[in-house]
Image (cartoon, rainbow, N blue to C red; front, side, top):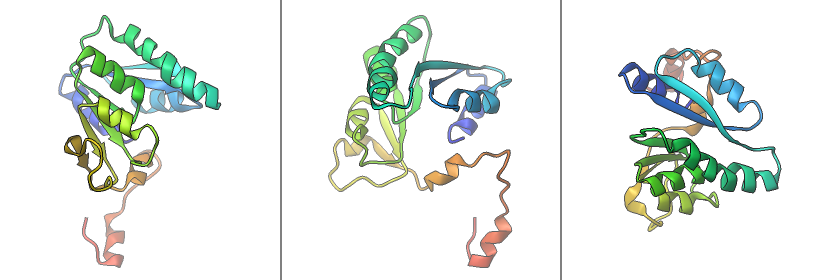
Length: 168
């Protein structure tokens, strides 16, 4: 859901949007359910994760880099936006494609690698003072959990904020 509005906005403005998703659990079905039928949007599963440590390293990362390289070779990609993923950031670096990475955990072991590879990093957390590649890190003033609320099931009511003396 975090990227859904961005995808819809870009597609509505006439951009062709490739949505690539790791085949992991029900993720492909969820993305297809949320995004299918939108004009100018193509949804493709690239790589898999069989929910084991070996699969997380080999299938979802190492093998996926080569799958991304093969997938991108005949496409014109202007920029990429991903969620803290090494394969996408690495392929973008190798192909000179600007990449923007969303991250919600600066303590994650892959964070420094992704930060080094990407063009810009968008965080929901503030990295430690003097952190690696600080100049390319932008902090988003958001609560990451809101990104996971499905609009089909969650209906906001801003009047509730009044109970707490808050304004939207």
